[in-house]
Length: 598
Image (cartoon, rainbow, N blue to C red; front, side):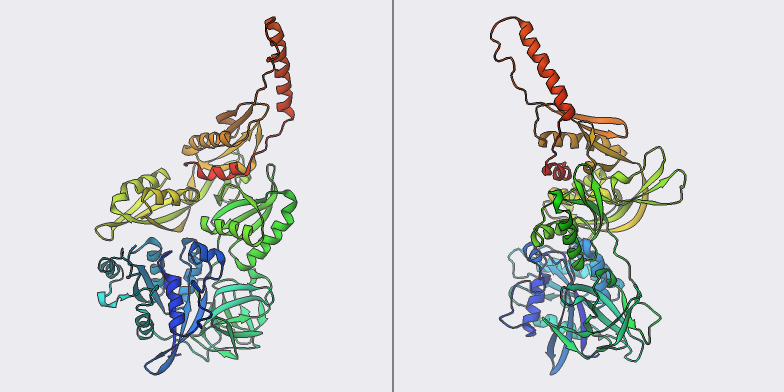
């Protein structure tokens, strides 16, 4: 155990985390020249294109230091706020963390939030200043920022460049010198933390774990405490670029287990593995079921593809256990699924993976968050509302509660005014304002989650010229004055466009949706009325004017009564057409509702 070091990497998106991991794998000869490629641990095309880590990964390196061989277990973590639970489990499996800060961009919100997670777990922090070779880098100033943030000495900050390989040896030496060796009792009952799982179509679920106490042996009967399920450890081993099977794995080490589990919901991230014969009484702290924050309907463009969409979602859930879905039907869009996501990035990624990996073109409805409604007859019994159409009538409704978050925004001092205005417009309540340096400010707000799922992030980047970074964490439910805004087209309710909106904003948003739809719905031979309604009360109306045929063109001269007769005949035809005519709402209309401020 004295020769093992477990560490993770904490960094904001695009601060060079994956590239630094590549250089460390090359330096320790974990990968050969043939296996080298950029973002080696990011094995999804989507991760490479966007330059982000979506799934956490683990890999073991061997490094010679002062004539002795050490085992370094790197547990890579996603950088985006949507995947913070995965980050917290990866941190729980480590004794130390590399804090990577871009020398050009300085400290960002996601770095700080993950740093706090690491400090809560008492991890040893090794600060690394990356990208010092860039012409725009400002190493002295950013070093001062890091010293102020984690209260270390300036000489403790390692200067590196993942691109050129500068400073990699210093980082590896610092990992061995500064990060403590893991502790654990090899004779105690088995206690191992599951920090990730992946689906292998031939062998079922592969769970990645870190042994805290005890020893796990091949062929041993093991038990997952959260689900209570028991399995045989058919294969265990350590994680290099390929899996290396082993007979036993002792305390402090990281490995994988294949036990023939077919259902991804039976292996939960954060669960504890123990022995069936001699089980531990104490589960590892911090386990929780991942809760979806944002909900949206996903429908196939062609109704016949419903079963294909179901099988695509089933396969996708095997690799992404945080995705939830239930079947639902819509009068406008037919049969589809109401899906739960961790956040807006997660929604985008699921939609893109459906299109790429399964060639499914889908329509996504307006995203919304999960509300809790209380009825007059049972004012203490909560009723979960994930779909605006499920909200009870206002006559029997007692109150509605919506989820709130604490938002942390770090921006340049020049943009504080516009950022505060945006948060107040989104019903935010300012809690704190701290100057991290003379030029950088951290603003803390309490905001309703519903207000940030639409366009908040895009608008924040626009008003701060890309300088603001944003991170949030949920704080619970608060009572709000919410109303359901329905969209009617020719008197028919289009349920896929319904939304729960705060009473103060309902008129404004209803008007904007109607104006947007008027531009997008193609003209017909009859007038199309587009209305926004709260209950029976119409709050806004727009009309798509009819395409008119000039029926009086053939009347040149003659009595006016001939023209009037033809116009009356046309009027009757239009009335009949409105009764039997159908209006096709184009797919672009459902997407346009998400970008009302453009």
